[in-house]
Image (cartoon, rainbow, N blue to C red; front, side):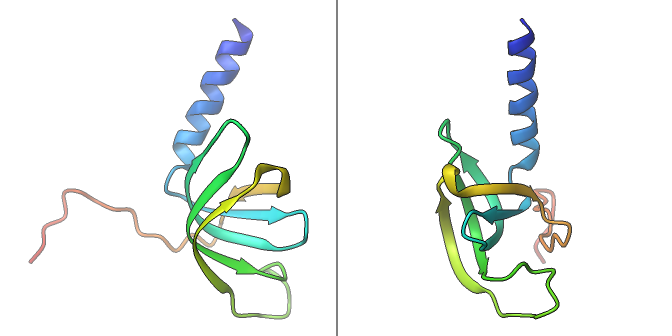
Length: 99
């Protein structure tokens, strides 16, 4: 029963991450930042509106990101994944009126 509670907690965490801007650090040193769309049982991740940085975005040297768009990141290449604290996305509100 302990395992079931952990699974539910993991699913809830993934649901909270949906449509959030995520930062993924990869084994080769690249950093990808994009909207978390989905994952699978092999820990592959799909990011939308994805940008690739060769150096960490926080580094002193600023670089222009390479725009990837929709990207699939193999789970075995992911070192770290976190919510991007510089989240620039605007939550979509279905109640907004168009004028």
